[in-house]
Structures are given as C-alpha cells and as structure tokens.
Image 1 (tube, rainbow, N blue to C red):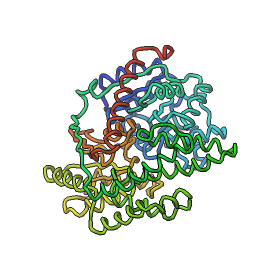
Image 2 (cartoon, rainbow, N blue to C red):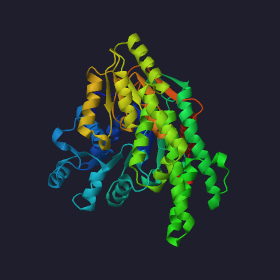
Image 3 (cartoon, one colour):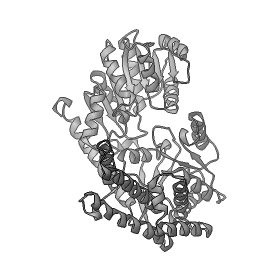
Length: 496
C-alpha cells in the first residue's frame, strides 16, 4: 500500500484533499505553501483506491518536473522503479517502456502530447492527472489537448490542477476551468493561511529620473507626440493624449487585415504604428532600465532594415538622443535605480551576512549591468539565472539555483525564468528592479521569498512613469482574481 512518509498535512491541505477526492479541482494557493503535498495526497489515495491504475503529473519545464520527481521519491513509499521522469530528451522507445512499468509518471505536457499523438501511450488506466502551473491552460497550450484526451479515454478520470495565480479576469479563469474540466475551486489566500506562512514586509520606493535622463526622454517623447498626430491623416479619431501601446498594437493588426484589399493607407498605417511602437519602447527602456539598455536598442535600430527604423534614425531629435546616450554612458551616468539597488543590498548584507537576495529584471542587458555593478562590492557575490533562449540549458539553470541555495553567491539576478515554480527556499529578500502589469508574474515573483523565514519585498518604481501604472494595474488584477475565485468557490461551476 502506497503511503506518504513524514509529512503531516495542514488543515487547508486536508480540506482541499477532501474536495479533490470527489471532484475535478483547481487548487489556488500562494507559492511555497504546499501545493505539491496535495498532489501527493491525491496520488496516493487514487492509486490505492484503484488498484493497477497509474497517475500522471505534468509540469511545464524539465527543472519543475525534476523537482516533483525528487519530492515524490523522497516523501512517498513509491518504489524507485515505479516512478519515472519523462521528457523529450528520453528516446521514444525508452519512454514506451517506462510508461508500461511506472505507477507514477512525471512529464512535460509536450512529451505526453507527442506520445499520445503517435499512439504510444494510453490514458485508459490513468486514475489521476495532476496539472501543475495550471494558469498556462489557455489557447492551444498542451494542457488543453491533454485534458480533453484524458477525459475521453480514462475509465476513471480525476483531475487536480495547481496554481498560485490563474488570472485577473473571470473570463480567463472560466477558460482555464473549462479547458481543464474543473468542477470545484479551492482557493486560500495568504490571509486565510497566515498561521502557516512567514511574514513578508512589502514596500515600494519611488525614484526620480535625473535631469540628464529626462532630457533624453523629452527628446524621444516629443517625436512620439508629433508622430501620433499623423494618425489623423489615416482617419484615426481617438484623442492623441490618451492613445496607448495597446491601441497602437490593435491599430496595426487592423491595418494588416486591410493589406489584402490593396488599401494604400494600410501600408502607411503599418509603418507609422511600427515607428510609434519603437519610439515608445525606447522611452520605456530609458524610464525603467537605463542608458545601457537604451544604447543597445539604438544599435539594433541601426541594424534594422525596415522603413520604420530608417525613418526614426533620420529624425533630428532621435539623433540628438542617441548622441546624448553615448556621452552619458562614457561619463559613467547610470539609472538611479542601480545605485539604490546596490545600497539596499549592501545594507541587507551588512545587517545579516547570511541573507539571500533575488533581484527580478525583465531584460538580459539590464541583468548583465546589474551583476557587473553589484559585484564591484566586496560583500556581494551576484550570479544570473536566465532562460534557454538567452543561453542557459535547463540543467545549467538548476545548477545555478543549487549554487545560490547552497554556495557562496548571495544575490541571484533573474529574468522571468526565476518567477515560476523553481523552488528557491533560502531567499530572504526579493527586489523588483522593474514592474510588470501582469498579476500572475507579480504573484510568482513574490512567492520566491520568505518560504522558510520572514522576508522583504521591495519594488523599485521610476516616478511619474508607466511603472507606477503597471504596479497598480497588477495589484488591481490580483484583487479581482481573488474576489472572483472566492465567488466562484461558493457556487457550482454550472452556475457561472
């Protein structure tokens, strides 16, 4: 008989377990509060109840799958020969053999989808499908296909979906629940389970741009405002003062649809909106990242062969902005966020030499600049965690995390790859170098800290810029998500 070894479930985990035994359930819990325990509890229950059946646990990345594999192996009595970790790196013939002998299969959804499509695996005897990071179950992501096939083929289907953040709108939550055949929602907020979690001290610092950076931004914004007026020439009537990035993207899509009709204004419209989006992006980089990221953008623009890029580089104010960017970098000028970031980290490490700090940033260039700047300090040992597209394999990513957890590095600077799922238990402080309007990413970022001991979260926000808006947009979406989920939990899904 399969059993869980040493873990004693918490009260909310028992409550979720009781629901998930009877209904396909999505469990929404703060990061680091034991969603995997619920996966283990239900797996043990289903495999014991339905003899000869199997369980499949799917998670979006190989590092996450490896974490689950270790957790199940260490915390249940499953024989090591009856649990398998399947990824695309394992040859198909070997995967087929592992499917046959394994009671518990942990895999990426893409791997299972491929094997289902080729007919080398059957879901007939699978009594439980656990879906990790369930907020990904939108559109054509593999979770949707996998769930549909599972419901159709399994003789005794049961689904447990796990996430910290399904989304900030009822429409998105409804889509996820529909795609995963969810029948019940179980949500617990940090307030609901505060007796079990460490305290987080959250604060945000508003940082003013220096006059030198404001001068460059003024040049960029003057071009942006001037070019916005040209939209009137092609019939766009929305007031210039309230046009935003979302409007421009939507407008560009509309123009592309008109290309087939040989509409002359469509070509001009596409080029104009592309120009506006690039100029707005330059302004955003300056406001939120700094001069090095802006310089890289200017360099890429010079390599860009599009008409929009050529037009931008021919504008006098842009040429002046490029020259000023170069001069300021040569004079050692940096975005004030960098100096404040260094001061915060120096103070934290002075007060507690064992502190482990995570810094989140959206751009690879910024991460390299942060690490170089921080490592000028004797007490700081900063390393970076980036995604596969930027140069680290999944194996290397796990090695970086392990080094941060167990080794001498005390600062981990990471892109979005460090936000989702990876277990980083030692972090005592998280600093958001830049903001995101995504409630999911904000929740994921905050979940990396204060897992074992109390922690701090600090937002660095450039004053009077879009970053302030991003912060409040994400907070509003987060509040809407929690309110919506609580309401949905109180009803049956058939009423939605």
